[in-house]
Length: 184
Image (tube, rainbow, N blue to C red):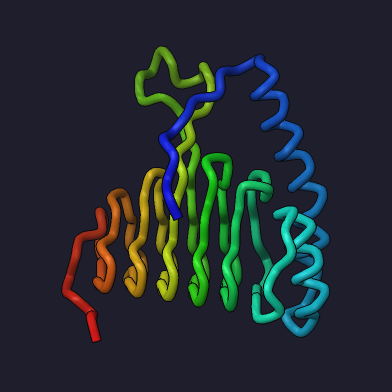
């Protein structure tokens, strides 16, 4: 999965109107998803598929509640598990590979605002997040846009990931740093 460069959506443009429409669509779908019980796996898959606009593998599993700003920029591989209270701000795009496990209270945030105070309300910035295959993201992790988490890696609970994570590593902390290799 290759990352694209980030982008900027100025206020009061057709692109910003499309972004607002996407948010309104997600706000209509997520309450339906979040009323479902974990045992309603087929219905959860159906509603989540509607939210992201793509069919999901029958081994996809999600424990509601789930929150997103749009949904249509989320791509999910096979055999993915997402625990409860996950938030995905997907404007910049979120690609999740096969066999990924995402713990509770994880936030994947691809969007933000310009740093300069005078420009902060001018629009929205966005950069993609790529989570490669067989990654485990533990509880309470935040991953910021522009980051790739390499295959087989583990992000320790409570970490804030602001830079790419190398393959086959355990990272942790704020900001997350490599703790050790986990190559088998």
